[in-house]
Amino acid sequence: MATPGQPMFTRRPGLAARLAFWSVLAISLIVLDSRFSALGWLRAGVVAVFYPVQLVVRAPFDFGGEVSGFLVRHRELQKENALLRDNQKQAAVHFARLNKLQEENEEFRRLLAMRQLSSYSGVPAEILGTPRDPFSQRVELDKGSNAGIEEGQPVVDGMGLVGQVTRVHAFSTEVTLITDRGQAVPAQIQRTGQRVLVFGGGGDMEVRYLPNHTDIQQGDVLVTSGIDRVYPAGLVVARVTRVSRPPDSTYARVSCLPIAGVDKSRLLLVLEKQGMPGQQ
Image (cartoon, rainbow, N blue to C red):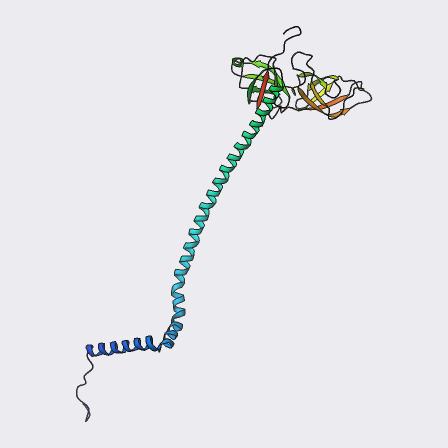
């Protein structure tokens, strides 16, 4: 029951009144804050209170962004690394080709100089390969009887004597190197003019049947003497690397190394065959 003086029914403000009240309050607060910055303390407090919550909420998104960025950067680095490796391989290939072209150019220059200095014409040829036997001192050239090559012709590179043609086919030629054990080259010591006989040693060379008292020294250069009418005179053959004179032997032991690139040159010159004595 209602007490004396208390109204029996109470009326609350309607929705429209409450909307008007809160609207007026909001507008008043906005005006106060914009004109006088009266609510700065409240805003700072709210931000301070909710800042840890904001960090907690943002943490998964920040972590996901970092992981995504790391994966993207990792993929980009992998692509860049692969591109750099491809560029490096291409540069290495170009560099190897350039070195090969430079070597071939140097060989061409030496062959041209050899051809100009020699009074004999020749046929340039390229080495196709070597026999499978590692102890065989032979090479195969890409020119044969089709280019006018015959057995017995001397073969040189830009540095000196390489060998002699021993077998001719229609389109290829077999050359036995001067380092072959079955090869002997009549030569002479360039310093003194003393004639010697140089034999192949399977990789190096040696002078045989040279009397102990002969004037020959380490470093002497041996050149072809031309007396056999096979090799032109003056072709560089070998350089003396060791001289020993055993007291119990009549002959000196002389070791040599070929000066020509018998195991390195790719471009060779097959010189014309020398005539026998009395031939023009």
